[in-house]
Length: 292
Image (cartoon, rainbow, N blue to C red; front, side, top):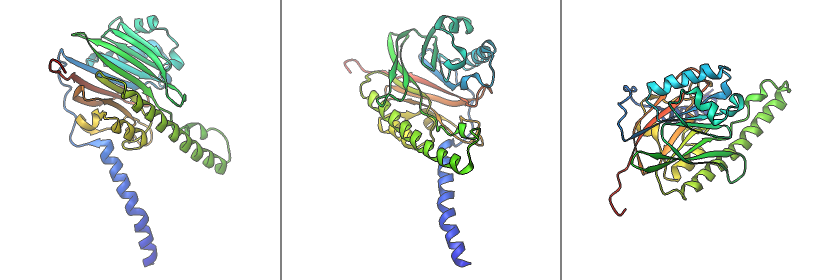
């Protein structure tokens, strides 16, 4: 009996510590304060995995909800992941859905960006392992300063399709395990590719989107090792959950930024139109001294 208790403690104590650690990383002390006023020199970013519109297949209705949220939160830029699959709209048609308020549009693969600021450059860039691509956008802000935004959707876990596959339990379990491991490696390599890319950027940089990973897992650590900061970890309060499945527990969406920006606010906004919640962060460009 004593041996059984000891074995249980050996298993349960590390598990409890691990769960507590993840809980602390996913949540921040305190309650969210009211959204601060949007100052003229601010840039406010929203990032949302729209989940192929599986919660609402009416593009106009969904665009109205997104536009209302963008207005209420005074967003300058809205980044959407898993956009392309259901909407299939070009930039002009997409912009019309947002009543012309966000007249600058970039659609690269499954990522879409609408912006109040002019888009100076935009391209679809392959990850180094060629597993997928990310959207690389340069915006021109007032004062003729540029900020670069990489909108990303890293490899999913890949296990969601197994539940309806009809495979035997053993085969399904093995398949899920192998897929989870393989996709985890791909996701890490994609993050390494992004980290390498940051070394070539000499302007204010934001990397935002659905990373499909918990804080301090390999992709997150790659962003941290590249000198990027996690906006919610720095400024967020309360629940950090951005994914309503899995017990509404996981934080898998992030907005990272470099030292050329100061984050003044970060929060989770839930508009109930996706299985994800929107990350919203406000930034101010660092004022550089002359000659630097």
